[in-house]
Length: 182
Image (cartoon, rainbow, N blue to C red):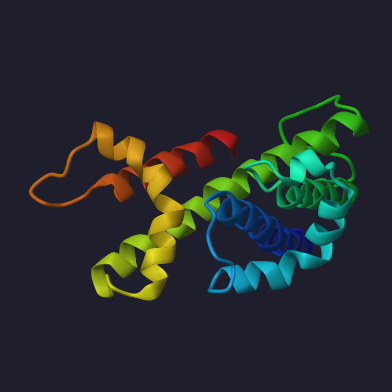
């Protein structure tokens, strides 16, 4: 059973993460013709395109990519329903919750965990590439994705001896967030 739950977690982490990354890239007005845009479009088009056609026109013209966000939400609800069925309706540490409460609760927690883990993955790749290959084309894409999250940290914590510790602080904060929702 643990193997099946692990595979379910991994599969939906990548699907939901791709939908959220697509939403973030579109919100940041990034071109989807380069990686990771091509990948997230290929993985999520099957669910995002029909959702975009059903959303009101005003939502489609907003600054946020609501189609991708709702796709992530629907995938999270599907994950939580499957998780609920496989676990027999039990949530560790939470008792006496009905079926209608546990499905959205698990979905929200899984989406939050996916956001935190996805940001951590982006931050780690960003940090490693900044040391190994700082002028890589992927570094520019990662910079546009992660800089809005690093900017508030950089305002509070300055460089120390020419070393930017903001990525390290971000990773620590993300780890604390993951522990809190764990």
